[in-house]
Length: 173
Image (cartoon, rainbow, N blue to C red; front, side):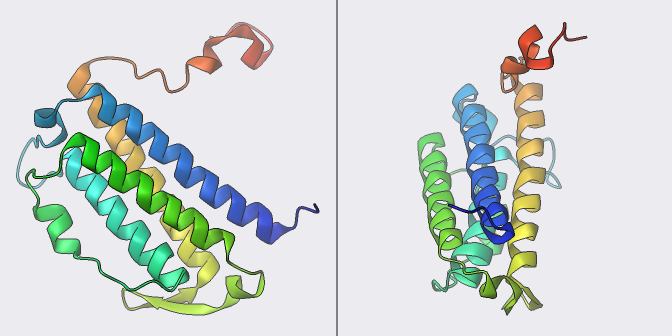
């Protein structure tokens, strides 16, 4: 199969969402329910809120906006939640929406990348919508990783494979 730019972009986008979701799953596995829903203050979001927010964002922008599914997002509820979803439920919801997004991305044709869509009142090309979601997902994944490290005081081992000399061809500093 010939790798074209559209396939490279779409495959990477799906893979990046999946990899980030796995990192979030690792974080969820290190936390208890209280930690997942803890906030330092009302102006902060709990990890649980960020997971709900990512699910809503990916579903609205990729599954609905790009893939054509109905838009059922309640963005305010993502941030208003103070619990109610277990760690297992959050993980399952995240896995499900990322799988739906990967399927929607797999169906995008090269021509559709330039097609304009309207999502949250933004009029933009499909390619830009996808790029926005991957970037947004990555940023919040970083927040979740940071919060998990702060809450657990531990290394999550997400990049343990880079600690070997073989990963860099020499000793890692």
